[in-house]
Length: 331
Image 1 (cartoon, one colour):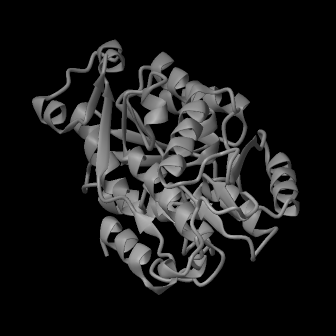
Image 2: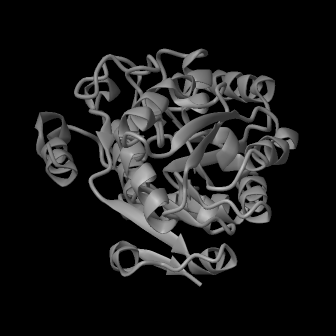
């Protein structure tokens, strides 16, 4: 079912006629958000502001009938586990998380409080939901990087840099869904016979990013990079793009966060969809919908973002085919 049709159907189904209105005199509802970036980071500030606005448009005003709180969880698994446990102890009405790592940490603490994820790329394989159509648990949400997109990343990298003969796949196996195996299988299947070869580049600490990518670059010319959807590389986007630029490696990234910080190109589900869906699902759950019956949804529109300044620094000329298809070209 298309997203708008689904939300319209939920809004008009039986429970909607008996729900209390958002502006009633009941105690304020509480929504807690686990954020993967420091709260003063420009991207975090922007996205939190957008969520406040989208919820206000649906009748949920922070400080009036809603208490919306956000917490940056830190930089390692232990800090994430502590943040998840503390938020669960507060018993909010809904917990909103971003990545698969955050989802797993919260679900390890609760199977009762509704959990909404924003970028869980393999929610069934990760054990977050029983099925995409009917989660049958306390988690649901949105994914803008289905593993099938791996084929598109290969296509885009070889289109903008036709001389690519080796592709380094960069990710942290501890924080990438299914330890990256689902994406790697798709990438391998997408490689034309006799074309580029794949090299797995594991990065597990910020201090290792530059060294791992340097090691790949030193093995010869014709190298390019693909970064998998991963909360670790997302948080360290500046380090990732700086290493690729320093070593003159063309790279395709899974979020526009990277291109905004100097990366060459990103291709992912449109970010605007994520905010709209999360706000809509928060609204539905606070009004009485059962999270177990809200299907997981994937992007239906995708955004190609190209950093033209980064392309020029790499000596690459953007082909007309990419210019036409790009939703945004940063200069």
